[in-house]
Image 1 (cartoon, rainbow, N blue to C red):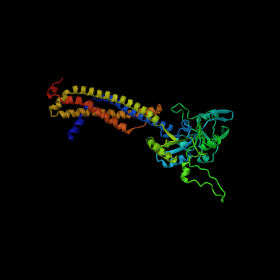
Image 2 (cartoon, helix red, strand yellow):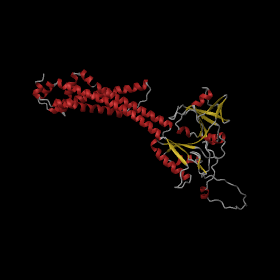
Image 3 (tube, rainbow, N blue to C red):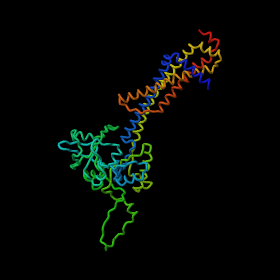
Image 4 (cartoon, rainbow, N blue to C red):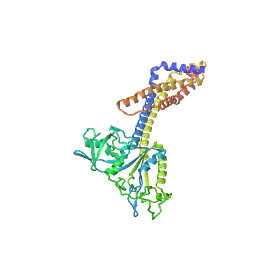
Length: 456
């Protein structure tokens, strides 16, 4: 231990004799470590920003919609069946642990008017307050409608920024009224802008109302209508009609048993919805949520094992994977550039150490002549190389943090500080010192003392 301490002190004294050259030697390591840290923090910040953007778009979101109905062997197209009810949503939220929230949806299409202005919204949605939670949508002005508004079919709505700009000329729409299909709706909130989605559609060109209001007041759906724009057909339902008979009347036919009612398909009236928007608890739980929803709906719709589902589930994980893989690729490219910088810095260390060995040949010979062994010389030069790299690494960490802060301050790029990256960069810089300093140290330890003392 004492011998190692003396070797370290000797190495430090040797570096201090040429402090300016030592500083220039570790400059390459400084730049490389600063680049590694800055690249990792900027890359992590970009990944986090992309993940937040994808989550905001609905990466952990599922869309449950009716499958295609058949009319005399002719498929009516996806979504044409009438197979989903609002009760499905309630039970799904209660019995599917991987599901975080659920929003029933119906759709419509119609001209919006306010005063002398009119606008055809890109999307007219009927849902519940859960819709805004599933979509991660906050409000720029006002608030959303409530569950009581849904229950009472109140004539209220929430609009997107595009609709607000085109109908209200910059004034606050909250409290004012617009008309949809000649039905008056009071604006209670304006959504924060989201911009275009990955398909180029304007997400802010939207109006959202309670689904009961849209279905029964706006669409006037007193029977099979999902608001999806497709024809409706009959499906299995637990709904039955109740008929009142006089007390003394003898029924001609006996009352149907409960299981017979369950197995007899009748028209869904007043309760069917167009789609169900589901938010999974996390992206990783999406497959589990799909399995749970599938099992639940098959059971509720009384589908036998040999029957196809009367619904379909679509997820957006492919979009999430595409963006995540792109971000990961960019981060890897940045790390390759930083690794090249480390290699260049290591080559600089080796070059200067070779020069140092040549300049200090007589000193090495003198140390060997007074009893120093080859391993002591090897250890000394290795320690010098590692100290240079560690010093450069520490300075590089400070510069890297300053660069990251400068990027987020002046360019407004997101960053995410990483302690692990800092420790890894420092460890790699020490490894570079050992790898690139070994050959000069080994060469110094192999010098012949007599030849070294005679070196001019």
